[in-house]
Image 1 (cartoon, each protein chain N blue to C red):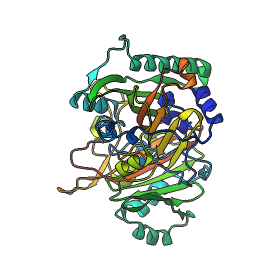
Image 2: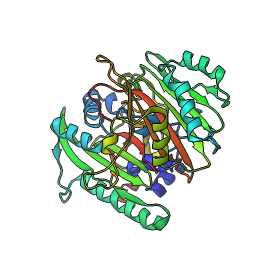
Image 3: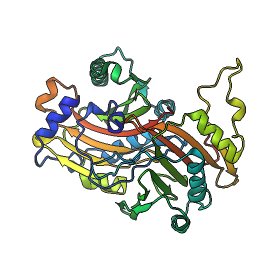
Length: 208
Length: 214
């Protein structure tokens, strides 16, 4: 995935893309609020999973066939590959996360709650996906909703869009990202992701 | 290392460049009192260098700059007149729709001081002193030094498990003030890695919401 990230960075360029909420039918606010509710406790995986379940999301069994299980399986395989590459130089482990699904304003949303430890550093992620979205959410809509502009925004060749906020939306969150991957993204055959991704990231340092 | 850990599985989406605002090389704590970063380090961050301060000196510095200043940056500026660590303020302004928020803090060669009160990223008032040390001070040495300065921590009876073994989850806390409305004010010391093979002592003063247990 790091290689993929680099490849995307290398093809960076400006490109005007249509926006999801340019189409008034896309329920951007409802989707963003679903993210805020689901991912507000990302710094604590147990709290995050309980929050998602309390909000009515349904657990997606890991062995089911869905876009979220394919993506998570891909991510875990990449993690294992990287861990094998790191060998004894970096102790790492995946933490116990989970995947869930819900319907919001006619959209099927998935959330993946995940975490990994690298030596004495732990990273948690909470990501809401709308795999079928066909356009990004407008930056102005995001700014109004987050009450501040992104720290960084990029639109890349091929219609990839990424907005980053540091700190994140909620107290203690290091970052929030709202990204869009076009349905016809050329690398989709290698990387099972499309549509909107809204994510919260946290980091925690453990004692020596 | 920090960036990589923070991106754990976040790599589901391409990780591109972070914004190029300067930042202080210190840590914050999240609402649970756990050490965290609020933004990724960037190329403009001046990294702390390992220093030779003793634990007693670090604890005295924390008491001077955090405990006596009540989460007040102006009071901290005044307290710094009597401090010879070499701190200078690094402003980091964050624009929001309701005005600017200051993410900045003070930094010396081997130490960083971050403070926040009534801001969105830390509704719990907090003051955190981070000191990079050449010598490794394990958690038990830090605990002893803190006990010398403050007495036993609130949760000291949990340092051992019922079978007599050391409790690996023991995290000492000292409650130094109680407020029925605002919640308790607590001190949390930690002995951490700097993520690059170095050592850091991190001592936080934070006002917890009443219902949150660190």
